Image 1 (cartoon, rainbow, N blue to C red):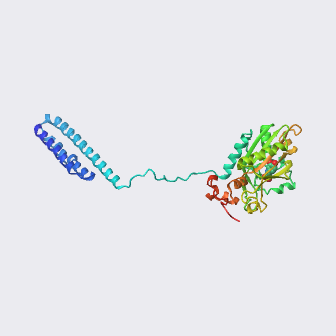
Image 2 (image 1 turned 45 degrees about the horizontal axis):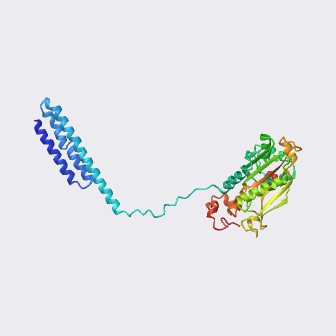
Image 3 (image 1 turned 180 degrees about the vertical axis):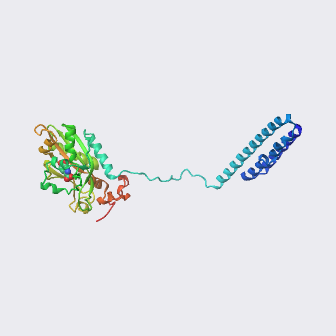
Length: 356
Ligand code: DAH
């Protein structure tokens, strides 16, 4: 009886090899495989016939058939892999050849906002001079935004800054100067701090005014600090940012928290000083108001003005970014218009955003 089985198995192997040889693709191969190994297939019939064998033959017969089935499945798997490889080769032959000299796909690079870029740059320049960053809240109290800066209630200087008042009695800080007294309280003298941050003013927008803008406050307090120190630091910042000797002018300026106070202007980078909407046709841009810290402000900060002096400045970061990157209209910086964040190395002409 088992001899008969051996012959049947041999026949099954022969059938498998024949079908494999005849199969031209993976689908045909799959059909052929089920003709052999499926329930209704050749091997299935052999398994079904086991029941007719004498009791003692059934075990060995089952084993034989299953071994044969495994071997046949292996043969089909090998054949399938061979057909797949052949199909791949054929597909590759039809495809255009790979040319390694072609330029790759251009992946657009992200970039930081111009204001952030100049902020980081100024922070880095001043860090080299020993300044640390000390920020304050955007929602401020009347005390820090005005009172402690020598701007008492009802003082006309309050009108210099149109303020967004909040219903909780606080306000959106109109400048970064409130960080001055906060820093004095927190750190004590001597100190060198910068406070970059967002400021808010209730005003009509135009090419150079926005209701939301960025400043960077600077404060240096020590014994024997003079105007010479102030000017040296201001010049250093501008020269480093613009990587050349920048043309500046110093005018007296009134700010209640400094005495004396100055307006430091730089020649307009957009028009080269000829006059344009950005500089209100004056050829100059107010960029660095500054001065010697008023004794009253030192006192508010708990510092004895007989022992210490200091200078402060309020760098207009937004304006500085406009000058550095040639953005003509401040509204371009908040517009999401990607032409406003062109990188300096890509800059081909001065005009990026033009609105008059
Ligand atoms: N806080 C002033 C403003 O936004 C700018 C300013 C002027 C800041 C003079 C200073 C300073 O620190 O010394 O209008």
